[in-house]
Length: 156
Image (tube, rainbow, N blue to C red):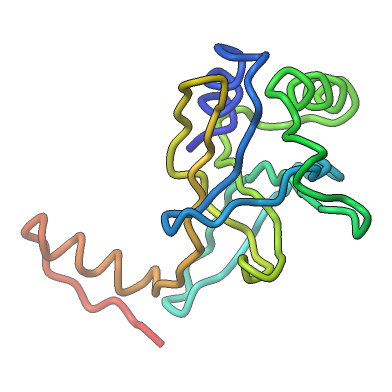
């Protein structure tokens, strides 16, 4: 999901509690804090020798040791106030993918993809999906074959 799509979804329900969860129903604990927003730029070279460039917006969540689930969830509005303050300070690319950095006993520390944002009954839920790896050279070769082209792309 792009940063723009994510923020637009949150703006629809600013009074809702903002719950981050995975497909198994594990939630980031209530009382979490939005501790950092990062404008990340990547420049890579894949195993086929091709350069790749992209941007990501990374929002980092953290739960203090003295927090408990009685602290409640941050509202979408509070998240947005922090986000808006940050965008006035650093250049975020709104078309960049938004990722959530988090880890605890239920979530392996990682950068999670935002699969969907839904709202109902006073809660806005952000569905997180774990990252995966791929071989970009192989993916390009398969896409070219599916398109009817023939190629000899190096891989690995």
